[in-house]
Image (cartoon, rainbow, N blue to C red; front, side, top):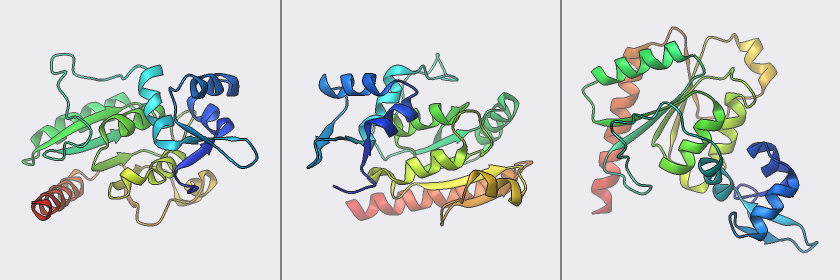
Length: 208
């Protein structure tokens, strides 16, 4: 079994912020898929663990007046996720993205937990994320996302005000992840959004 697709009950417990015994109970009840190693240890589906977040933590900043969201696997509309723990910045993003002349659906998350929940539920094509966030930092979240096989084509962009030496203290940003500074350069963001929309259209055309 591939390292990227499976995780231990201890790793899952740390990610979900529950006890290891709770995770074992979820496995035994079939809520999370698991296999047994030759030594009898449980190995959990990383995709199921992350998707299970959506059943145990509330999703914030949803538009209650527009509860209809694309289902997983619906690739007709560009899905964009912005993860940021500053509400003022999220509000600014919501306003700026609304002015972009590019069809998309924007999801907002106030921390990495919510970000992982939305990744598991909506599988966004494009993710923007801060790094310095409580509990789980952005690099940890990115590493979890890129281990999910279904997310291999997702583009991830870091948006941070941190200096390089401070980023190094958190860890290494994975290859292929673009880094943008704060204040957010929305002209560049719009270009990235445009590129992602074009890539999605090309992928759709090839599938027909």
